[in-house]
Image (tube, rainbow, N blue to C red; front, top):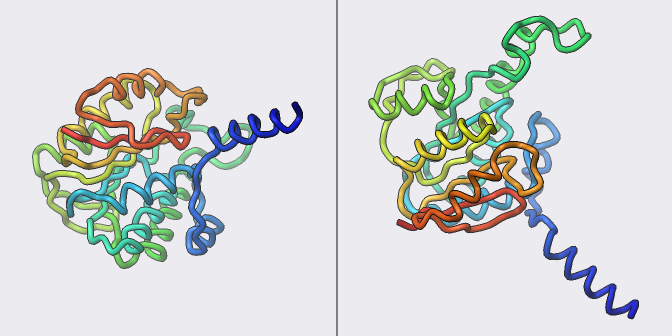
Length: 239
């Protein structure tokens, strides 16, 4: 009986365990580059990037200090992909709307924002120098309006870039409420190539954010296939 229980437990652990990749570069990167990146997301990113359907750009919604983007540019290089990378963030964090300080500390929300943004730039200059992403300082809704119009804009590094076209892979890590995430999905869907991928951060079934409802809707969408749940959801566009 004990051995039988051990086998059942072992199978259960395997079933719920998160798949990860072992990579020395990513280990060093995560030591130095601040950010909140689930290791399972790295596995999903690696799988999606290895199987990109086209040379269309990769998009990340939400940047913070750009850890995830630096992982993406590295994986693109690792798999010999030449896709350009775009990201969008306004660096307006929860609780910062009314200004003031961080809790009871002496650091203001404004100074914190500027520090994070400057850290983002430093991290990009070092870790993504060979494929520097075009980062647009905007909320995702604003970004997609610019993208739809095909506007020519300046990114945070003061480079001119003309927007528009398709995407091959999108990592959605912006506002996690249902309404915002739903709009991000709808906007990405307009431009995602057939065979392209969407990865949703903080979308696991046990996550307290509002993405559970959206994940169920996309699973029922005939144009999408659930590629992986690790524990966050990676979808592939099939039609």
